Every structure is written in structure tokens, then in C-alpha cells.
Image (tube, rainbow, N blue to C red; front, side, top):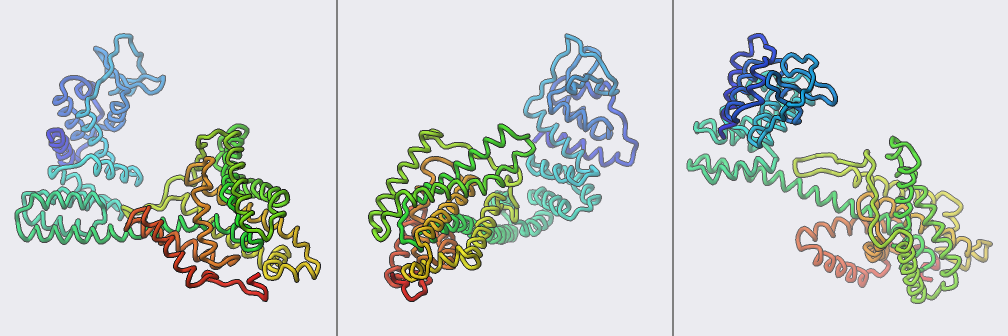
Length: 530
């Protein structure tokens, strides 16, 4: 509290003298700020702020960077290999007897507050925004109101003005003047910041005036309502993100299961293959290409993960699965064994531990829509990517010769064979396509989760539930089921916890399938039940 009062006094003097001519930082003042007792240093800093010393911002930054040294005659600033006098800015020589300037936590707090106060009047908008954020983090008191009033009068940016207004109201809410407290509460009621809610709750515990207590409760309720909307929207977005991942995983399964009736328990491991292909591409970019190209590795990993997983799927279909058509239980056991083989192969090559896959720079960060709602770029990218893959699969099935063959074999395999369709080759193409889409899912998952040998085990059951609920071989049903289960699962998790949410979703699917065995969308065709 003492250092805040001292820096506030300095800022007040600055405002009083702001019409005067700014002065250069003098050698005596530079030494007084860097040496001596903490209280004396703070007083000297406040005097420099009040005088508007032109070299003060750079000097304060140097002190915060521990780049200032003292000699018996000079105060020196170290800038890399260059040494200069703190007051004159002239080059100097660093003597052997130069001593480091030590700043305790209290002094650092005062230096940071002074730095932020000086930056409120910077010409660059970004600098002013950072200054406001710094002051909000460090905290202020009512004696600093003149600074905020002057900054508000000079500020032209609407967002910075709103933030300064909120800071001002945050100071006034603890004012000794009842009218000012009431005005502050009314201003803060329009906020949606959790920190403002905490400030009002703290004030409510101290407030004795009945009218103000009522106003504080209404303000807290209004902020709670806005924060609740942020939480609800966050749950919906998280559900859509989970649904898009389930959609990617289930799309390939919908093709292979819908076409051939193969219960492919190795589908999750095909997804794992795509994730490890992404990891290998990342390492190749890091080892053999310029650093500036690293962020593009994901773009190269997309086709690579598809092709590698599709190739593995084609080999599995031609070597194992083609001999087990019409025997679903045996295909289940065979593909389960294949999944174990694939997991052990990955452990032997890459190790049993998870491998690191980094997000490129353009997928890092997020969009802050509300104070408690930030949409990560990698999640947004996965949602867009899932629907792009869906559009590609839909076009392939509806508009290409391969799609025509797949649809023909799906609806009536015997009739398709009678008219000359090579059903065995179509099965291989379809299974490879489904495996390739699983590889794309693994590429996407590598950007939001861990990549390890057990990656596929976390999604195989959910993907089968999506396919069965949506309707075997039905893309529209797969989309609705994936997004619906994703959102429903997240809403239930928030209400009942993760374990109970899984149980309730499973019970819902069991009851639904009992009432409608064909799923949301029934397969069409003369031999759809075959």
C-alpha cells in the first residue's frame, strides 16, 4: 500500500506539471533511483515521473531487466555489449569495480507501476493496451484516479476507453463517498469479467449500506448471467469439437462397415498410424528444411497420413479380411488381433511413451469471444477440416465412378457382380479409403492430444456407436450422430461427471437401437437387409 501511495503521488505531480517542459534524466536522479534505501529510491522515482524526465522509460526498463550498474561516479546501462551513461546516453567504459543494482520485490512492483503509468500516454495503441492490462494486473488505489481521468480524456480508442472506465470504477467501488460507490457498482454491473465479480463480492462482504448491498447483489447476478452464457457456449463448442473428431473417426468406419459389414476393431490403430505419420513428417521438416518452413509441416502431413493409412488398410484387406467376409465374429477377432500387432509394432519402432507433436504457429492461441470463452485455433481448424473431409467423401461417393461402384456393391453385391463389377477390387478400394480417412483423423488428433500407441483405443467404441446410431453406411446419419453425441456427452459431463455421462449416453443408444434398429437413417435398396 505504501509504494502505491508513493507512485500515486508521483503521478499526481506529473499531471500537475504536465504543461511544463520535459527534462532530461539527471545523473543525481538516476543514482537516487538506483542506489540507497527502498523508500528513498521510490521517492526519487516519483520525482522523476513528476518531472517528466525524457529518459525515464528506457531507464526504468533497464532497471527491470537488471541491466544497470553503479560506479562511484556514474550510473551505467548495459545494452548487450554496449555500455552507456544512464543520464547522458553517451558511450562509457565498464570498470571492474562496477556493482549490480539490486531490486527487491517491492521496488520491482513500483518500477512496473511507473512503467505502465508512463505508457498510458504512448502514441502506439498496442502500447497503451498493454499498459492498461499491466495496471489491471498490478492493482491501483483511489489516489491514482487523476491518472485515469487524464488518460480517459486523451484516449480515442473505444476498447481502451472502456477498459480505463472499468479500472476507474474498480477504484471508486471502495471509495469513502457513497455516491461514488453507487456509480461504480452501476458501471461494473455491465462487465463480464470474473475478476470484477470477485471485486464486487469482496465489496459486498464489507458494505453496510442496504441500498448499496442490494445494488451489489444485482450487479453480481448480472455478471453471473453473462458468465453463464460464456460457459454454455464453451460447452457447446467443446461438444462440437468432440463431435467433429468423432465424425472424422467414424467416417471411414461408416464406409468399411457399411459396405462390407466388417467389424474393424483395428480402425483406431489405423488412426494411430496417421498420427505417427504426422509425427514423422514433423521430424523430417525439423531436420532437413529451414526453420521458416516448419509451420507448413501439417499441410504436408495431411496427404502423407492419408496415403500411409490407406496403404496399411489395403494390405490388411488383401491379406486377412478378404477371406473372412460373411463371418462378422471372426472378422472382429481377426481385426482385434491386427490392432494388437499394430500397437506392438509402433512400440517397437517409436517406443512405448507418447511422442511430441507440436502445433504450428498459426494453430496456436485462440479467439477470445468473452472473458471466460476462448476458442482455440486448433479446435476451430479441426471442425473446419472435418467438414472439408466430409464434403470430399460425399462428392466422391455421389459423383465419381468409385462412388458409383461402392454404392452399387453396398445396395446389392450379387447384382453388381452380375453386371461386371469387380466386387473384390471395390472392397479393397473402399477399405483403403476408410483407412485413409482414419489416418486423416489421426493427423487432426495429433494437434489436440497425445500421440501414443494407445491413441486409437480411446475412440474406437465411440466411433462404432456413432455409426450404429446414425445408420450403417449413411453419411448424413453419421454427421448427425457424431455431432449430437459430442454435444450431448459434454453437456452431461458438466451435469453428472465424465463416468456417468458415458453410462447415460450408452444407455440412450441401447434404448434407441431397440426402438429403431436401423438407426437414424435406414439403408435404401432392394437388398438393403442383405
